[in-house]
Length: 329
Image 1 (cartoon, helix red, strand yellow):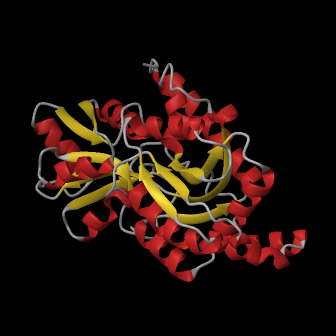
Image 2 (cartoon, rainbow, N blue to C red):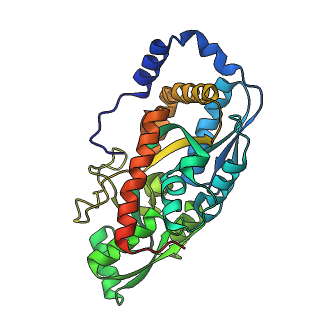
């Protein structure tokens, strides 16, 4: 997902698809579903991904005419949730809300993840991009990346930085920082962002790398300080925070994605109904406002476009991971 690509708003994309397909008369048909839908999340309650899932589930239930229940299958960086999706019936009643890690990165860093996204899943739609960021505990005197680097150097050049999952992009960012600044930085993997941020606020670790949605509320409250983030330009929600590129660390300009996935074999009509329902949710002003406040850039992508985003993103990080010398575990 490249920031230079032109984007249409969720509203205009949705209207064009309805008009082109003659589907305006089907708007009531979105309520034909009566069975509850499980919305799988691969991380614990309380984190950024969980908050996004609960926001969308609350809106989708009205359009689908049935409950949408968020089910946290935390563990192994989303691997458990992904395996649960693979085993689910392909009827549209089990979906996986995931960012890039579980879909694009896990298969590159794990020898036997237990699923193959290309054959086991169908991308339903993409709905947002976001930036990973380096944040520092408020109990630490550092208030910038330069401050943090100087602090670590003054303490023998060693430190531990939290990451939400092993073998994740945040872990590779830790490695890039260590290489650039000639520091001995070790990534400490957590089972999701919520426990990592809790340890940062408790000053158990001085720094962590995670998504802006993971950090934004604590940043606003002054409990952590976001000091650098991914992307080719600054994020609207954090206009005073520089990008890694601005600070001299190149290669982190492409932003990760969020999207919905269904089991392979789910009928096309079901995928279309879910796609249209999500597009309608993303056109709601309160949803757009909430997501923007969380640090997300809403970027609705129908099935084919989103499948291309996932494929290209996976190829980009396959090259980066291979170049890093990382060995799948």
